Amino acid sequence: MNRRNFLKKSFLTAAVLATTTSLLVTPKKTFAAWPKKSFDITDLGESIKSVYGHNDTTETTKVKLKAPDIAENGAIVPINIKTSLKNVESIMLFIENNPQPLSSGYNLTSKAVPSIGTRVKMGKTSNVIAAVKSDGKVYTASKEVKVTIGGCGG
Amino acid sequence: MRLFGLIILLATFNVGASPEDDQERFWEYFKDRFPDTEYSDYKNGVYSIDLSSREQWESIEDFPPYEINIEQGEELFNTPFKNGNNYASCFENEGIGIRQNYPYFDEDRGEVVTLELAINECRIKNSEKPYSYYKGGPMADISAYMAYTSNGNKIELEIPNDEKAMKAYENGKKMYFTKVGQLNFSCADCHVYQTGTKLRADIPSPAIGHTTHFPVYRSSAGRLVTLHERFAGCLNRVRAKPYKAQGEEYRNLEYFITYMSNGLEINGPGSRK
Amino acid sequence: MSTIKIRAKESNGVVTVKALMKHPMETGKRKDKKTGDNIPAHFIQEISGKANGSEVIVVHWGPAVSKNPYLTFAYNGSKGDKVELTWRDNKGNQDSKSVEVK
Image (cartoon, rainbow over all chains, first blue to last red; front, top):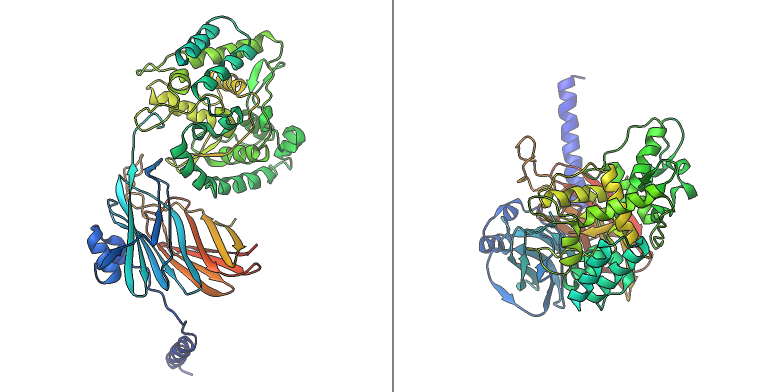
């Protein structure tokens, strides 16, 4: 058999197989790919808009943001977010005065309990904003975290 | 009351008091300074005296980054040297749960032996290259693992009835109270007299308990830091020229300040800012 | 050696997963002190958290997450569940670890 024809046929077969397979195994919920554009944005308002497509957010006490008043060290600031809101799709963590405000996003399935925690870097004193998408709407809670530098600690 | 305690402390250290007296005076000074802090809690360093940073520290200690280092240290510790020997052969109890026995004064050698020095001497004895005491790495990992296996063990440093041992202790003590550098600070300035106050954004930690929680995983460095690297760091901060890690000066200093922590439990490695 | 340490505990029908990962999480903005060159960005971008094979959470991280990063999340589950965490970074590296819920 002509090698060129053989390869052509193999690719075609492979392509057909791949398409068929992916159609058969489509996951029930596909999460967005890593949102490069959002992670690059330097303005908080623009950042929020790029994530949700709008800036319609409502502050609520139903989103609990736990963060220190004064970060002991800006390199590791412990943050915890939880909410009593239902049908939570995602939780996003913004740090307003960081070079790029979007620090991280947590996409949840219905099995997940809306409670997450991580440790982030903060360059300077800033508002930290937790945004929760529940039943299609975006709710927020924010807190100012002071970051100090300088001392004998080195 | 605070001034009185300070006067007692200074007066005692000017006279040739015994190490036991020194340690008692140290404890009395700190007890007076921080009446609500239990002696045993000093193993937690600055977090024994500052509540706001303690909460963040506890959050990190819930799952601290140094756990990775302990695992790495354990693997290094259990890996035999090229000649087939291992670290366990250099230490009593196979190197497990012995951190509290260091540093000690070796009367035959006439000098202070620290744990990290002993680790490298074990390597050299077995024809391996010594590890660096700076910038984390395998030395810090092994030291962290050995500290971890010793958690809870009390420091019970005894200075032998030996002229050279007393001299090493006295030299360490003298260094602790001597002002150095362009900023003209002594160790005591920050860690005794100014502990609990704010030096710019930092709260100097109390002298008691310092050696219990090393090596430390420093958030600012993103890695482990050994005690002697920290000594060097402190000297740099007061703009003095640091001594060499594991040189005689720092070993004597470690000897003195470990004695001041007698009775405290080993609590390393620790997380610090 | 695995770069992931996981603890998963169940209480009242909720499994809390805590994970510590070994990773430099370089922002790409730091300069090498010796050469003056930028240290290239190298950070975990995505973490997939699965329970018994099905996805519970998909985490998207930027370089602002701390070095040797920490993550905790929770889901409705039971003791004995198999929790699996997989991270992928911007350089195409990845690592996975599974534990049984206690």
